[in-house]
Length: 635
Image (cartoon, rainbow, N blue to C red; front, side, top):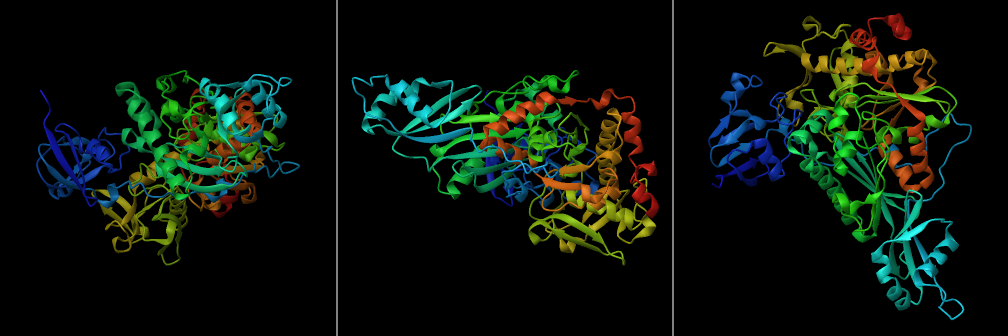
């Protein structure tokens, strides 16, 4: 029997969709192209996917995440509610996750490793993984009567030293005709596939000016793409979008579980659609032919790459945490559904382990930790909180399981680095708050850098104590609502969302846990090598914070080790930077494989002191002030 269909209308967008009667409103929103915030992936435990029922009857599961007043006003959780008939709902501002343009880190547009401690500035040889060569083949004669494909290869080898070369059947079939119609004047597109160079396509005449590639950061929260001219390494344009997989779970573990229970197809389709939408936007905006985009290089954590390629990720979350593959070979992008030239190649940067992925390999490549003599640390402040320690002699890494708080999730008014996100906060002497937003518009939430700022400022002003508890008597901005203390960062009259932007007790606890996990991971990693934190000579901080990160406030919070601020550098999105370096240099790609062979993964959970250190770090800046000597004097 065919299931009854109902029509759901989403306001304020006015988008409509027909779905089966038992479809949740969260899934209906996905089908309608209405993106509703959801951290838990539909398990009904985060409370982010709130909707307001305007017309129609519903069936809703009971929840403790809505107050009586909210229920009276018509609020429901989208993931726990189905329509009994045609329905009209409103997606309130706080529940919207619009696909707006995300701030693209300008630092990530440089084609160069940072390497500030190297004896000389280091550049990789410019040698794109895929490139076009213009050829003029001599006429055939009785004396020069090699087969067409051998003559073709010979001419390519006159321009490039290529020991092993191959062509697909499609190229061989059209080769004779094209050579004769063009009188031997052709353009060959060649691409690196391991030790072999493949002739991807042949075109009449000189088309070398039209050669493009993409560097893509496949992030858990966001997907960033840079369009690159492969002839001169110029970054033509950049675009970003939210990762649509978030409706199946905000964290990678929940996405793995979803893939196990319901199959990986929807997750793969979601990320492939995101990448295709970015490609479509970039090529249409820059008036480029899709057929001239010959390749893309993706960097992402191990789970994201598995889901992109359709690999089974299930063992990544089970001890001993074994991925299906850490170094996927180049493949046709069309094999996974990515729409570039039908014969174009997709490369993914190699992962280090199940929990430290190719995005961190890219970060090492970009910062040059593997090339410098001095002790260097890289902290990628994200859901997994990956940490790398080492030099050209050795490297170790770990994942600290920080959770997504600093990426805006698990925080009531948290959001990613996009227009309207508060990224900088100061508490003035009179207790007033000064803030700035990305884009200079009215605030609608607070991103990672703003969260670090506000936590440090609350502590410095005495509004929270060292155990991160709000002190209600310290400020009129601290109020009790629904039995919980919260700090009013921005009053309702100044926001886009029609309500005050606040930091709740639960938000503060989530942030403290996240910073404790990262600091404890860094501390344990250093101790495991019989070293001390003060011996670190350079600290890189990576992450999608936006344009701003205050390292002094990160220190006050106890997020980073107490070393000289001069040794701390925010390096932005090193994942996209490393992907671009590999796109433009075969040498850089080969170096990425060397990095994964050289580095050792350290499992924090097996360290008996990690939990003790984690608990000790859940204070500001730490229970042991000896670890923060520069702050101990002030405190």
